Image (tube, rainbow, N blue to C red; front, side, top):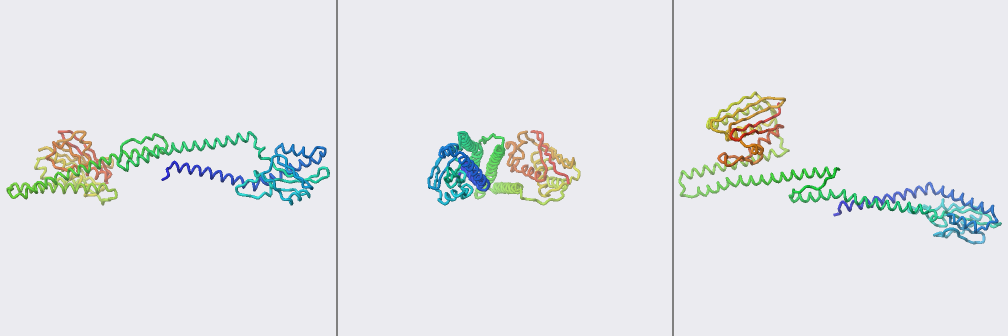
Length: 459
């Protein structure tokens, strides 16, 4: 698999080569369509000026004049009727020229070799050092006909300044390429770090900070990635704790069922003990059943695609029904239960909200003191419904209150070991209230009691 850096290098080089090729093609096309005709006309004019000077100064040796022109930056070819051929200035790469062209110029025609030079895609005629790529003019010197062919000497046109500028351009190109490669490595390095972090996360390794501190989009991505990693770490720990709690809460009643089942199989067990063991097995079975139901219920609540039916719900009627169902518990502990609540109406799922009141009132009874109290209050405030359930129970510390809504959390087991529970009740309450766009908070003091405050949107 190619790395992103190698792809960047290949793409950069491809763009540079492609740009250079496209630029050359555009310049070449412009030369052939616009400059070639102008260049031909200009050089024909120069050639005519040369032969005009020669014809006006017959006393000046012809070779001397042509050598001067050759040294001034032109390549020249001279021929006459006798077939004498002479070159001045720099040599031509290709000095072949059809006799028909020579004869035509000797007969008085103008040769437009630059204008008529064949057009080729990757060959610029301006730099083609061929005798055919010249202009030719006729002239007479000492009553003898001549044909002069000229073109600029490209080598002489490139002065030291041109070489310096060319070297500067080449140096800029090289340094630009190196700079792009360095910048590309710097830009891709954070992505490499993120890729490595992704591999670690795939192996459930969420530790370690991502060492990216840039302020650009990559830096923002790294921060978001770090936040995601932290949350995944928390979720992973929650998952592990969840599995540990589930395993423990299932294992304990299963061990009890297994142990007492073996005792029930013992024929020497008395009828009284047998009945006691059977009651324990039944109790543990109910405990397992309740735990399973609550786990399934939490799974349903966690499923965001689950959309329960919504209808008008009277909170007062639901709480009154729950209180009637728990009257025997109130009487058993001689609790003073009071309710002060108008007819509060909200939109929600009746079964879910009923689960909230059942859990909260059951907890208020379970962890209360004999001859204690339960105070249930409800009121409206700013399009919100507020319900508080206060008890005189054993209470909790601040640390315990902060964890009360965590799944499987149970306060000090040494004080509550006789109070059977799954540690899921308040977690279910919290999830249901969130589902109904409300929130729940808890205030508790150890040895004094607990107050649960529920807020729901008003109908």
